[in-house]
Image (tube, rainbow, N blue to C red; front, top):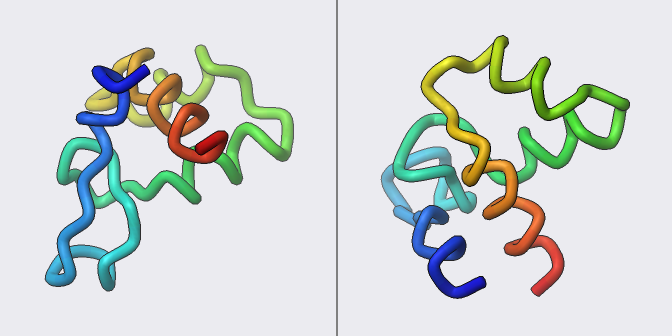
Length: 65
């Protein structure tokens, strides 16, 4: 799990310091929000082609911690 968590970055100068995926402008909360409304992993990856499947795993792992 610790390898997954390296995908989560927190930078006070990006997205107001909210946890982001690999320094991108998509937050852990964005991913969790999409999943919570029923978006499938595949749909998220199609909608955000710069994300990787492991990024979704990392968001879930971060939330679980």
